[in-house]
Image 1 (cartoon, rainbow, N blue to C red):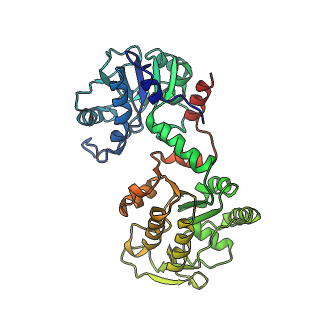
Image 2: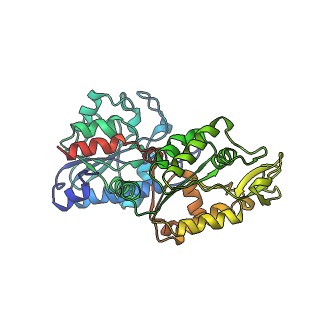
Image 3: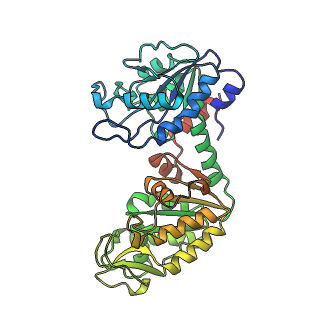
Length: 397
């Protein structure tokens, strides 16, 4: 995908003295007192902001935070905690500006944080009048918020339509590159791991990947529905029996291409869903009526690990068992270690996946860790994200 990159504009000296508007993703979790509890997104936004400052631009940054009501600002909607943390990371004061849509005072070499953009009336509906107002604030628009790339809003889409220049920041550009490498031009075999509690939430992803991947590893509650589709017992495990037909169709679509959905041959079961429930390994064909399947078994884990180590490209979304409980974490750990040890290019995304990557300390061994949950899933579905689409359109002139 061809987009204008902000890094290129800076390298060519085209950002010097220009008003640069950066849409970042600073939507961070906070405790009841408003303190930031996890600042990954703030830290991830720093390279783009620093790049703009080093280039001699007058820098404006904004983001949404939480789910505010448009036109009704409340203290808990404020980006003030983010401004403080950003200031610490940049080593300079970052003033917070409210009511900014009609004009912003900022000089080259300065940076300001513009208050929560979702408080502006018309933001979510991508109101054209608002988008044109925002575009008038800057010479160069930079989208560096992949986490919101699946939404067409005034600060993610409309402003890019009307700004003099619209570009992708380093975070967004890295996502575009990683996604293209994994899905548009993958090194084969391409193996996808799609896990989660429900087939219904991932059905379109499974159907889309079935047309492209060489192996489709399913896990969690999704795997239970596929076990049913294969005629195997699942006891009282979480599943969606009404989607067995769709699961069978995915298996058949893969088979028709000479690809496969590996069905677990052994599983780890318990009689109750609890961290201290005794875990039992058994053949997938021997699951009792009162069993809960909470993980894949060691034989299945070894088989899948071998497949992943021989892969050319791996796309990973979701743990394959209840990895929060140590007795049912071995399958996810085996998958994580195999991804880490594989020479394949790997891209991983989704909250639970990132938690598993952190738990097993393999961050440095994953080719690319995607920062956007919903946006990452929509890419896997084969959708073109609105933020990518408008930037590509602007780059094409």
